[in-house]
Structures are given as C-alpha cells and as structure tokens.
Amino acid sequence: MSDIKDIIKEENLVYKKTKVLTDNVMHYCPGCSHGVVHKLIAEVIEEMGIQEKTIGISPVGCSVLAYNYLDIDWQEAAHGRAPALATAVNRLYPEKYVFTYQGDGDLASIGTAEIIHACNRGENIVVFFINNAIYGMTGGQMAPTTLPGMPTSTSPYGRDVKTTGQPLVITELIAQLPGTNYVTRQAVHTPAAVRKCKKAIRKAFENIGQKKGTSFIEVVATCNSGWKLNPVKSNEWMVENMFPVYKPGDLKDE
Amino acid sequence: MAKVKGAIKVDVEKCKGCGLCVVACPSKVIDLAREVNGKGYNYAYMANPDACIGCANCAIVCPDSVIEVYKVKAEMA
Ligand SMILES: Cc1ncc(C[n+]2csc(CCOP(=O)(O)OP(=O)(O)O)c2C)c(N)n1
Ligand code: SF4
Ligand code: SF4
Ligand code: SF4
Ligand SMILES: [Mg+2]
Image (cartoon, rainbow over all chains, first blue to last red; front, side, top):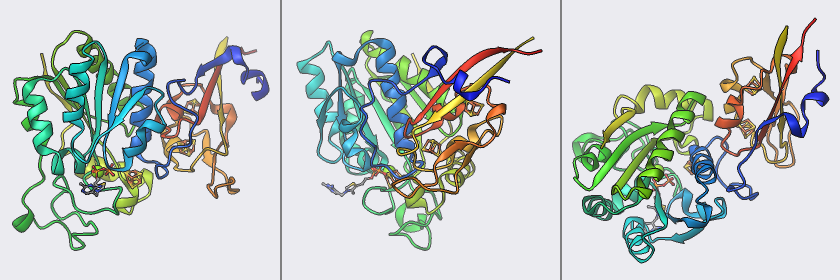
C-alpha cells in the first residue's frame, strides 16, 4: 500500500480550487448551495478563459457579497434589479460575458417585472436563479416560491395557499418568452448533479458568445438555516419536496 | 496489477463541517472529526484513507472548495 505522503504530491494532483475563486472564506452557512454554484461558475469561467471578459451582477440576498468570492468584475444591484443593470452593462459592453446571480426572493418577488422584461427582450446574458424557496438572508421568511404547507418564520403553521397562492413556478413562465433560448432547471445536491449543472453553465456562457439571447438557469437549492434542517437532511428534503414542484431538466434549448 | 489510489487534503481551518462530502464519497472514506477547528467546526478528515480512489466526488460537492484530491496508479503485488 502506498503511503498517503507518497500520494499527496504536486504531480498527483487531480482536483483543486479554481483560481477564479478568491481565497476569502465564504460567509455562507455550512452546506449552503450558494458556495457550490459559485464554484461551478468560477470553474467554467476559468475553463473558457473569460475571466477578464466576465461581469457579474450580484443581487440582494445572501449572495449579495458574491463579488468577494469570484475574481471577476462585478456590479451590485438594488433588490431585484439585477436584470435591468445587466441590460445596461451588456449594452455598454456587448463583447463581455454578463450574468446575473439572483435568489428567489430577489428574482421571483421584488424583481419579477425586471426579469420578465429582460428575458422577453432577449438580453444577451445568463441568469442564475438560486431557488431555495425562502428569504434566506433576512431570517427565513416566506417567498413566492415557498412550498404549500412549508413552515417559514412568516408562515409558522405552513404556507396557506388559500391566502397566499400556489408557489410561483417562474421558470416555466420564462421558458415561454421568445427572448430566451436556453432555460434549464438544475441542482447541486450530488456529484452527478453538480457535473450536470456545470455542463449547463458552460452551455449558457457559450450561448453569450453566440449572441443567442437570454440563457436562464434555475438551481433548486437548499437553505438549511432557513429550513431548520442540517445540510445533508436539507438535500434529502429538497429531493422529496422541491423536485415534484420544481422538476429538474431542460425546459427549452434552441 | 495496477490499482488506483487516492488521497484528499482538507483545508481544516476553512472546513465548515457541513458533512456533504461524507455522504458524497462512494468509498466511505471521510468522517467528521471529534475535535473542532478554530471556528468550532468538526472538520472533515480521511477516517478510512486506504479506501480512497481519488474520484473527487467529495471535492466537487464541497460548498467551500476546501478539498484537494490526489491520485496515483499503485502497483499491487
Ligand atoms: C428594497 C428592499 N426590500 C427588502 C429588502 C430586505 N431583503 C434583503 S434580502 C431579501 C430576500 C432575499 O431572499 P432571496 O432572494 O431568496 O435570497 P437568499 O438569501 O434566499 O439567497 C429581502 C426581502 C432589501 N434589502 N431591499
Ligand atoms: S441563510 Fe440560507 S441561503 Fe443564506 S447562507 Fe445560510 S443557508 Fe445559505
Ligand atoms: S463538504 Fe467541505 S466544508 Fe463540508 S465538511 Fe466536507 S470539507 Fe468541510
Ligand atoms: S476522492 Fe472520492 S474516494 Fe476519495 S475521499 Fe473523495 S469522494 Fe471519497
Ligand atoms: Mg432564497
């Protein structure tokens, strides 16, 4: 048997953190899906060699500080307004790779108008929609995406659909808009899902180079702090409860 | 016979002890330490190092990107 010391040598390295991620310690809770998605975006940017050409628009939500973690150019938008800011940046710098990174509160609540119109105009951007069915940053309040009966700090007895409606499945709406060319729903809860999600991210960034219009990637995600479950249990809960409502897979690929 | 042998290096001080790598490992290599790091987290470590195949599953699911993966083809008697 070879000794661990003989294996852990530079020449045997097969995986390490991409340099597009900074060395800053992420402020996210242990096990938060945001970190995994950040890593995948960073890896795709490195592999495509577009670090100098990529501009991210960060949201309001837990990922407000995303600009501390990906070593690219960034703008930070007012709550929900990332697609409007991305529109401006993309029109000023049409050769750049512009993306928004938004939570479900940001994109599907306060920012519903901005995202619908940007996608309808077919802005040549990538949209990352991190759907954890809750307002994570502010303490786990109900979002439009919260599941029926799901307890949150503002629906302690579970979401009552009689008064608050059904979960807003906004990605299905987005897929109907002619401005979008690629609309997919992914997750990052297993190694296989992570690999698949990375392929989707690569395709979306390549679409920008081909000026195809809006590529939209929903990532069904966990917020273990807001859900009051541990990270491993959160992934299990997500598969069991989120996937039936937010079904993983491609909705549109033109 | 050549057999693939792997090993991981965890940045202990940056690990948050979330346990996602533990369930992602197909060979049950990883466990969370009883000791904690400077932030108070039970960090991940190779509890069963001989079983590691260097597949990197643990590293790609790690939200904090604190795992490095190494792999060799070891000659077996
Ligand atoms: C104009 C405005 N309204 C409300 C808030 C408070 N606020 C901050 S984050 C947030 C929701 C974030 O939820 P989400 O977008 O789902 O992100 P997560 O933290 O879950 O990733 C709200 C309502 C704000 N910062 N600005
Ligand atoms: S509150 Fe939720 S979304 Fe925010 S960092 Fe913690 S787990 Fe992630
Ligand atoms: S997945 Fe990463 S942060 Fe979580 S326990 Fe494993 S090494 Fe630590
Ligand atoms: S590299 Fe593969 S086998 Fe080794 S610890 Fe990680 S997941 Fe387990
Ligand atoms: Mg959210």
